[in-house]
Length: 378
Image 1 (cartoon, rainbow, N blue to C red):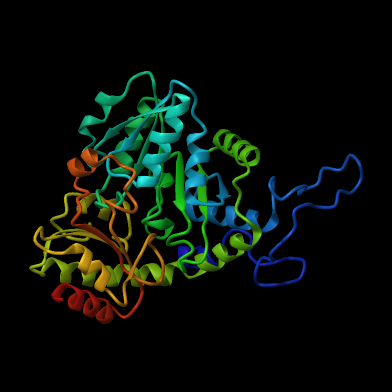
Image 2: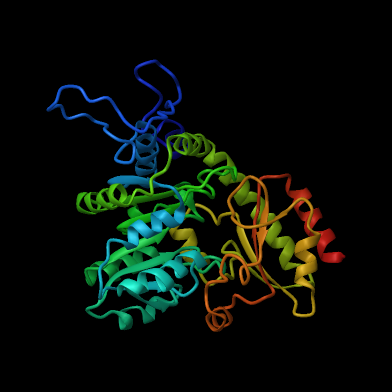
């Protein structure tokens, strides 16, 4: 089945008992037990719920993994994944990664003796030099958030397997519609399903997909033990959002291409980060491992330009947190999504005060360009 059809019919397709075309919302905390020694499929909704199971099976099919798990947020999914590690373990992470991921590793897991080392994942020539006996995993995003760096997943996977390390890939920006890291060698894929998978800025959710039984058993234990599960209603909404992912991502892609070219020609803009440009350092790798460039563009306004005035002057484009919704969303990474990253690191990698990140929505692209034009020219 092609992915456009799998998005609609993957996982558990409808309800076999009633013929409903949508999986019902099983809004229950507990389930009736039959005979005393019976082995029920469901006992308590923290341990398993039919609606949550449907979205977990759907993301498993879409990512071509072994098993999937749904959590109450992207950070809950990331936290569950990082809970696989123990005191003394070290994780290599992209130096340009979502600020919330950096924060939970730096401020939370560090307290338990789980450490990290930053590396430039767009230049993996340095990677093997950072591996020692304490390193147990490599955690990357591609494209990176917010500087749109591209990592060669196949190349990193080879290094990970050679050194018996887990490769964890945050696939939020691309979604399985555009990129499938497990098929490229990743062990674990994470999504902030709040973003493109939901697509409508109306729920918070996280997903984890693993590539083997042993990892599945460990994640399901963590999920059940710590309890950060996705609710039945949000599971239902997420399935509904995923059904239109292909349509939305095609529009995000086409709109972002037009907007990126517009921004590149503006005198107010110093630099545009977008992997769809042929001169982007990771363009060829992106073409090899993905089926598009996504809907995210980051750009740097000129130093003498009032970036605060620009952000506050937008009307169609929403100035706020998050990304991946049908509406265009713009944020200021240095003070919003990446504020948890120390100032020195932000400056070193390019997350400056004049950098803004634009999640291009599915509105008419001429209206998006008109809004940007008006705000730039005020």
